[in-house]
Length: 182
Image (cartoon, rainbow, N blue to C red; front, top):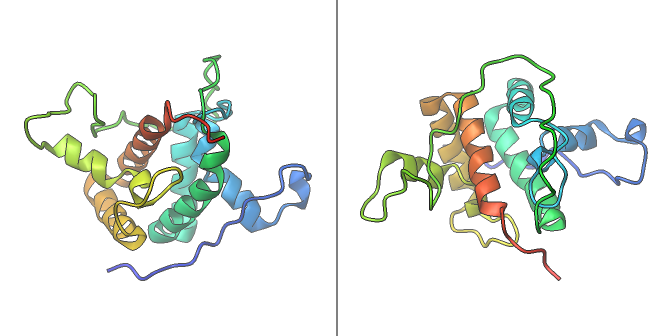
């Protein structure tokens, strides 16, 4: 069982210069998937670059710490960007190289979602969806530590890169269309 970790990231004051941000703030920005175009946030990084950058962060900090920090940053930032997505513009060019797979999990409404019974794509999608650990405006359906522990196991089963792709896919599908809170 993974021990409970404390977040080691912070969200910076975006009105200050990035040169003044602490390492914890820089790391908080770098692991935040909102920059891939979630909600009203414009897409400023490709999904692939986010996945590859997160792999490097995990190499430095460990997967359980990364997942702890990811949930912390999502809870701070997702509510700020809820609402209609930005118009689709040019896809940001990839800045790094690496083979990044397509999602291997299913979200409700996907072609392989089965309303008559469970399949492995559905179960995988549910287990790697971070909103189930309580990302506002969603209430937690599972304990944060249980989600992190499942994430560590799933990354071992799927492979780290595939797991990160699946997490981002589930997050984007969950957040899309959620109206901004007034």
